[in-house]
Length: 213
Image (tube, rainbow, N blue to C red; front, side, top):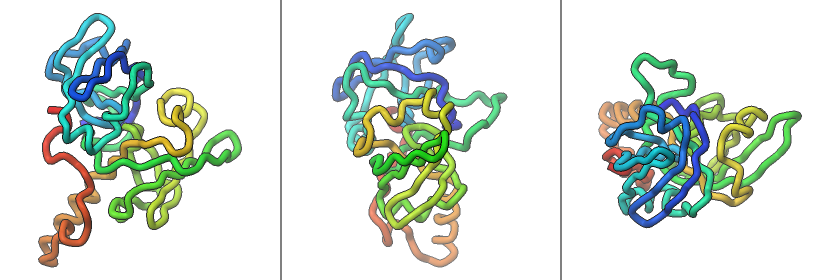
């Protein structure tokens, strides 16, 4: 489990269809083989490490469902280790199971902040509410407003300076993960009403197993 609070920005040093090598600093402090690390919000498993890098295998399903398949050498990525049981939950509950990908649709200055509008699959929008949570590239963000196929967030300068999100500008793809509690509530209501969410919408694209394992 993760919190959506980015610990540091890493750099892709090798990007192959089935392997990622990431250069990091803080993330390597206590990293062990088999540990989970969120890369732009995608939970992957560490299979090797050196003093400056760690390696993760990438499954084809992960590449299809996330932006991991778009990575190139030198790209900046958001890194977060799995939250410790005695740690503070500073963001919200994030599983690292990407529900869908979206795109940056608009960047609009708002005082010292920045309003960012993201295009998202319509099937995802029922899980997003004003002042609710969403994870974008692994970053815990508060939703400002929602539409039929879009939502906005407000980024303060500190956040913009300490995460990798806007490097690609308008049109760049992002990983999206909605609040898992909303999905559980919907599932419970399905059982009560005898309906099934999967009958009403297309798949949201989350891997039923830990992505990357």
